[in-house]
Length: 228
Length: 299
Image (cartoon, rainbow over all chains, first blue to last red; front, side):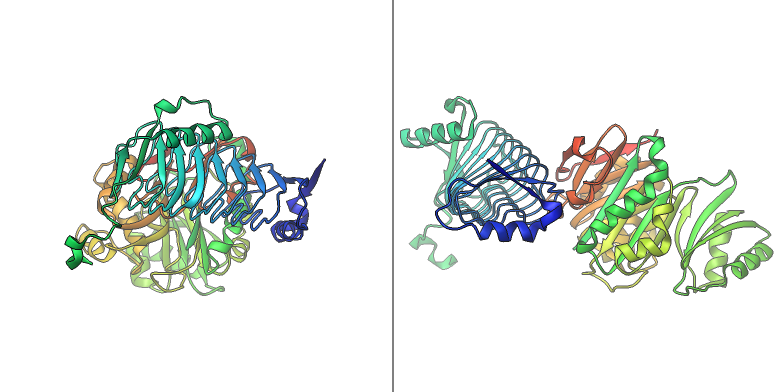
């Protein structure tokens, strides 16, 4: 049973207040959100395993701080999609603008189209799968979690990366500082297979390369003490 | 922060709706720029031998008829005039340089916001909805338009500092961002004969493109040169007599969305300004790439 919510009628704040009021333990709520009109802050701060289908394009910060909810955007998403997500799943059927999945701590973000610059910036445990390409400075200072790019990665990929893992199927010609290509372990490959499966992409995992930290930037070296 | 919008019509049957479509786009960007607003409209080209000049004053009751009468008698030119709030659009049959020189010397209280054959620029302090309403933007028909909603960061909140900026015939520019080398570039452009009305950084960008176009470059080449020489953050939308362009700097910190259908091309800082355009839900929508020049023209 879908519950229809017309954003023109209830407004973004009205929707978000209703989302926050869902009582703990509710598991079967399914809402269909009509008329998003590119508005900002749609479905921010969800805190229960509700399913949301947003029918149209959304503006900035959609699904921010998501916890437990399963949110699908049938359209494109603006800047700051699913920022600081904690858990749950956010899926965008179109493209996403800058800083998608920024600082995310958990859960899974799937962008079926392209993501713009700074995708996964400072990610801290989230898994992000992008069906297309990502723009410049993606996974900048990424600390933990996995970024899977089925297309190409833009310039400066993984600059100043910590312990996040980046899988790229297409080209990644311009790596950021301290980001290097690495051997993929069996566990990492299994992880990639699982992510592709959950995201619904039928790619051969052997077509992906793994990138990660060379650990020269963030590790303390006594030889460099004078530089700190 | 600022909001910028542009709408370039391919389908002539939409021309009567240009003003009302752009008014909605501007109003939607009011949150990004509540200080002042402005728009450039390309419409009703003047006849051969005429020049179209848009003038503004802070005086809501300015005696435009008196200005026109003096201009006609001093310069032996013929002038048609239409007034909109505190702006007036003059169609002058006579020498453009002489007219502009006369305005500078005889009517220093009046500012020239644009000159050309098609362009008209209107801008004033106030929210985008107020400004659009006072100028009657919804009634304007035309072929293309650009608009700006300003939240000032680099220079004062005044009408003079509002966008769009024009420094050359039928050229105008709206800018979201800030330039860091505008003072040095302004001095360089002044040595090439470009004149500036304000200390605003965005006006320098308009002057830069004016100079490049006057040197014989086409719009695309001029914008490519801009990528080399303009230092700072920018998303620009640029209008010419029959063209429209969008350019973002290589860091692309300032937002932009493009949308295109068979009937129109539009850009805005945020998608919500495009959502009401006819057929928007079926439009091709994308984010312009950093340091890539996008141009459209009627040619």
